[in-house]
Amino acid sequence: MSQYDNVSVTKKANIYFDGRCISHTVILNDGSRKSLGVLLPSTLTFKTGSPEVMELLSGHCRVRLAGSEAWIDYRGGQSFEVPGQSSFDIEILEITDYVCHFG
Image (tube, rainbow, N blue to C red; front, top):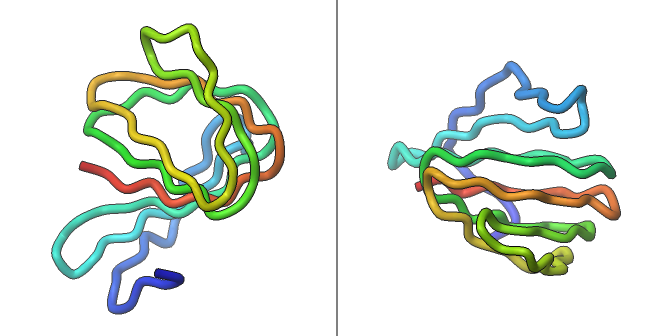
């Protein structure tokens, strides 16, 4: 799917890590929430409340889930899952465009 139709978008941007992660929240008609954003080259740690699926639209990064020592390489067109009440480290190797699917 290349677009979401009939949605609500929060106008105020979510800006994290001194601008290295910028996203907007999108709420679909069924009430589900997503964020659409861009990650700039850096190494960051995110904490999760609910389970998440990170869908990479473009870019290149490495991810290490909480409790793991292994870094896994991801590129645009791939996705990874993160459990709720957890965290993950992400090293952004190229500007990465993403959709985060919550819950």
